[in-house]
Amino acid sequence: MTHTKPVLPAFDEVDHGIRILEEERRRIARDLHDGPAQTLTNISMKLEVLKMMIDSDVEMAKNQVDQLHKKVGSVIREIRHLIYDLRPIAVDEVGLFEATKALCTQLQQNWNVPIEIHVPDSVESKSIAPARQVALYRLIQEILNNMKKHAQAKTITLTVSQENDELRITICDDGVGFDPNHIPAGHYGLLGMKERALYLGGTLEIDSVIGEGSTFVIRVPVRKG
Image (cartoon, rainbow, N blue to C red; front, side, top):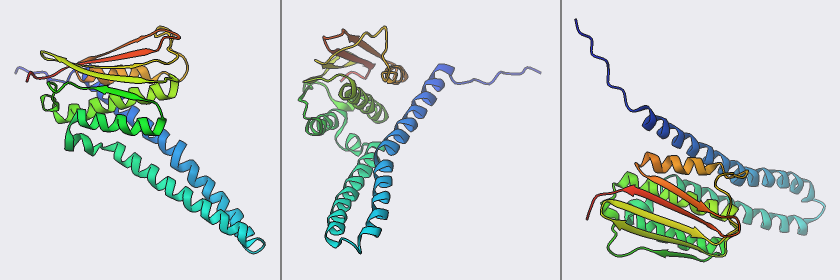
């Protein structure tokens, strides 16, 4: 009797997929711990103080209630943002590039850092499968967040172009830069970004010089037209 070996999925592809999922879980856990969890802990501690204060200083207690009310509102907004981030609905509704424009507008307002975005009319989201659009959106978002955290940039530029069956997304900043051959502490997410691009069948090229900013170039295959 002839035994046929089972066809196994490519190890690299599965491995990259698992790495991406685990990194996403770690990021969400980090965001929850550093944001809402810490704020709620602080609110809980202040409520304990407020309970002791309420009989001795009513006016100060009222002021504390007002402050805590504002903090609760801030936590609610942050949690809603994290929920939205789990599944960026805008990508499904308007496509990758319109969603990216909206993201850049939002981040520009939040960070007070100008973000220029250039997408020619000839490049359309429909040439990219929906799931890949979400994956690209997350990669763009991660690069922008990395720039905000480390680059100290005064301006950021995002440019989209397509040549035949290759989509190119270039994101540049005029920040402090770094040596890509010697990744400083806190930049280990760069490996995860490269793995995301690889999982999409593409590449992420990083060019940076200390004192001269950084350029991230995403290249992924897409359909023509």
